[in-house]
Image (cartoon, rainbow, N blue to C red; front, side, top):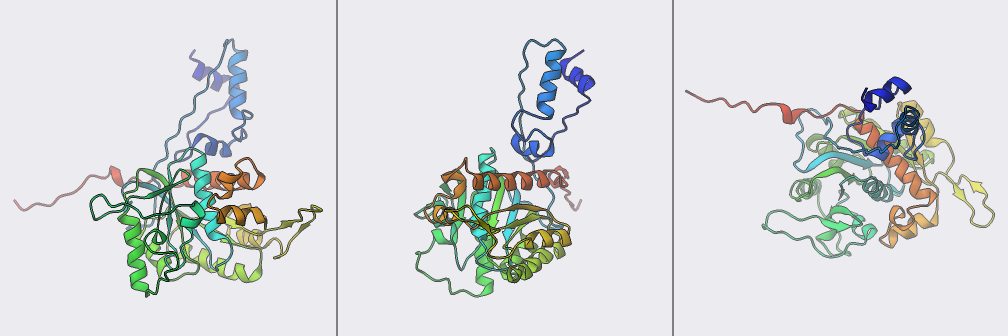
Length: 343
């Protein structure tokens, strides 16, 4: 009997593939959590008990495109698009977006980030990227590089002190050009950092951009939750799945006495998730290090990769990847092209 069949007989385990997740992300679906325990260790132990002198386990992954809104085609070079949104500004959405992108990349995925906040771009500073993107053909832009991410932002094309005094149509056109005229290089995930609110940018995203899922960022404060609910319902109305909710500034731990206080209230995102039937993916503290690391151009996931906060971001990223992997796969590439000719 082959060893592959033997361990199924001995343990009753079937390790099904999770399409669209890296090995560590796939572990979120079982009990091993990527640390050699749970299902994988049971398999190894069963093989050794059956007489195997040594066991070598190799795990590979393949991220695939997943279904998007009806009538919207995938963009070449991008498999999955994650929109990071908030109803209100100042809740830490951009910081969450960049750390989410970095966490996905740390898991082995090819990741890009699009700064869709035309009026207030912040990703160039958060990623510590300076300069202008190149254009090899005079028509398209090469993405900038920072901490292993491909990145594009209107902030790369204007001076840092230049205000964008544009009306809605110009803003939406700029978003489309940044997205479709950038030469993305085979991305597993593109994280889109949206501006706050439910205006022109969000509407364009819903109607013309193939979004795999949306992540809602809020704080526990009631006034922030009011607008976060509006953002969540907007995505539901246009048929974009909600991957979950992230609560920023959930609590503050005093650096001197370690007392935990809830400055902006408590349980807000948990109630919102329960009422809307979505998942609370993670709760992040009100911590000076998150702010200072983002301001320095080295966000938490790269500044302190082994810290508790970075682990929370990685856990959020894994859950996002698994929820995408569990969704319906995009099969549009399998359909034949139909050509009607006059004969």
